[in-house]
Amino acid sequence: MLRAGDPVVLGVSGGPDSLAMLHLFVRSQEALGLRLYVLHLDHRIRGEEAAAEARFVAETAAAWGVPCRVERVDVPALAAERKLSLEEAARQARYTALGREAIRRGAEGIAVAHNADDQAETVLMHLIRGAGLAGLRGMLPITPLSEYHLLEPLDAPLLLIRPLLDISRAEVEAYCAAEGLQPRFDRSNLDTTYFRNRLRHEVLPLLESLNPGIRERLRRTASVLAADYEALQAQVEAAWEAITLEQSAARVRFDRQGWRELPLALQRATIRRAAWQLRRSLRDVSFEHVEGAVQVARDGETGAQATLPAGLTLRVDYDSLVIAPADQRPPPPDWPLLEPGTAIRIEGPGVYELPGTGWRFTLHPYEGARAGAGWEALLADPWAAPLAADRLTGPLLLRTRRPGDRFRPQGVGGRQKVSEFMINAKIPAAWRDHVPLLVAGERIAWVCGWRVDERFLVRAETERVLVARFEKG
Image (tube, rainbow, N blue to C red):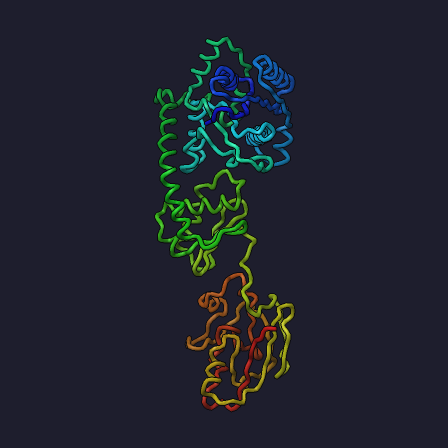
């Protein structure tokens, strides 16, 4: 956990665990060549009792020759301001203060006094809340502080270490008694309105009546699952590299087919990882969120979406899966798109600018041969369409789609909703309302860029041809 000569910051509350840890570090300081610093955080919850604890820690550290800093944070106000539980606000305040002190002291290691009974409680708490492997590992002996929620980002590679994680609470209390230590007693640890306290004082004693070794079983489970998690993470990393097409602070995009070929465990794990990468503040992604996203990603048609926490969604695209904020849409393609509701009147042959796009629409008579390279090039251009002029009757409009729009796509052999055609043509959902339609009277002549209506095709008997075309610049 530490190297000879390392500075280390100890989080000391004054209770049995942290006082025993401080005592052990002081006894080992010279042999291990460590430089010790103590930080105590007053949470401003218990008034004079908390102030007395702060004085006790400062006086004890001074008596044992260890520099000590006492910080005070109004945790109830912090919890209200950030809409956190009191427990979570206290945790974030504590780890942030420890991190700041480590940076101030030039330390990489931060020691906290969680014991083996705390580990059993943590595993049980995560099990009740429905955590996956990551949560069921419980606490780890060494963890990067960056994996925890903090009140502010700390730009330093800090490590949280737990040197008492394999020592039971009974052994800690026996050590304190044997060494004549007189720790402070925090009465809030008896308050069973806190989730962890209720597990400690009510649930675990009940489980021990069924299995006296339940605490050791829970700790062993955490150890086994921690090893399983490491093996799984190696597989997740390989899968991530194979299927990820794009990853940024804004979105993660997977190859759709590649993701669907993964085993279920890796499908779940890659979705969890993507959500965490985009929202580092997430403590966990619930089973319900993950399973809903997996089902949509595996079985959903193009355009289907699943809700993830913290404002994220998983969206099924034609060849990819996109995990991004719900209000984010893909970047606009290089097409002549219109704002929804736009309608440009086409008075006849001429040039018409498309506002704010850099594109223009032209309508001109076609006088060339209807065969050869020139005609073939015209037919191959998606943004050009030769149309039967005698069919273009009634007011001509260039507009976006409206509810109920239908047309007769060339080669389909019947009427089809424009919305259905756009889905089949794999036009991204975010841009379907922006695609221009050329409309003659009440009939759609051309879904621009994709398909001409059968009724407006140029045939052998067509006398006059008009070419509709979009040009850039």
